[in-house]
Amino acid sequence: MNRKLFLSSLLPASAMLYAFKGNAATTKLSNEAVKHKKPPYLKQGDIIGITCPAGFITYDEIAPAIQQMESWGFKVAIGKTVGARDFTFGGTDEERLADLQQMLDDTSIKAIMCARGGYGAVRIVDQLNFSIFKISPKWLIGFSDITILHCHLNSNYRFASIHSKMCNSFPTDWTKAEPIQIDTIKSIEKALKGEELMTYEASYQTNNRLGEAEGELIGGNLRCIENLTGSASEIKTDGKILFVEDVGEYLYSIDRMFFNLKRSGKLNKLKGLVVGGFRVKKDDEGDGFGKTLEQIVLEKVKEFNYPVCFDFPVGHQKANYALKCGIKHRLSVTEQTTTLKELA
Image (cartoon, rainbow, N blue to C red; front, side):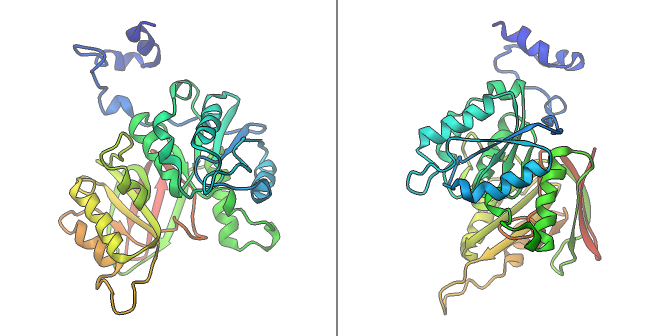
């Protein structure tokens, strides 16, 4: 296929004037031309696929999620990796790759919910083919290890995705669920339907750095973001609002990861920094690190003047709201509250 003709069919006429300069194979589009693209929002009867690109899970464990998504008016397609197991993984690398690829290619599937996190996405991400996805995009949903896929999609193809709870976080008995569980899971439905702009609030924290900023929202699990440095999936943060979260890490390890962000330039040109839930692992008795999480973060960003907030409701915790990666948001950190609002 003639590359120039093919790309011309995808680019708006205004972008065609500068889409090529010299060798078409090596020319990059301007920043304005490569704005993030939103997959279509879901409507009644649309299909959500469930797959396991990382850890394993059983059908019984995803049953509450299936029931809930069907109550939202969607249909559910269950991938072959649900119930499969290869040690800690939801099937072999080949099985997980094939299952996710099939859902990326199936144009009848309008969103893909990753069943759970764990570990495994990085083992298959380089083999994924997004050629059909680029023509018929869909929402990719998940967090934790799924940060690998969010970052890869963001940096290479610039389609928006949803960082949120997965199937293993849906309550087995909805009537006994805590209000925060209900609210965060309903935020997935709101994000998928796109009927209103998403707005989130967090209480004021004394270590917050006040200010306002606008930019595309991107981020996820800090350990995953660090591990992608230097790879084809490396996160690109310039001009963006970065959010991070993690679980089960020592403070010295968190310090090392934030130094990675700093030394690799990922903190230099941010519009804002959102620090979500961090369940810190306790150091051995008598071997404390000597700095708090807040001190670790503020030390790394002291030379910059963008807003920073702590204890935002995202991460490995019940307060884990659905965030749209790649969509422009406004971050407002005041002496009363922190607000993160999706912009049209």
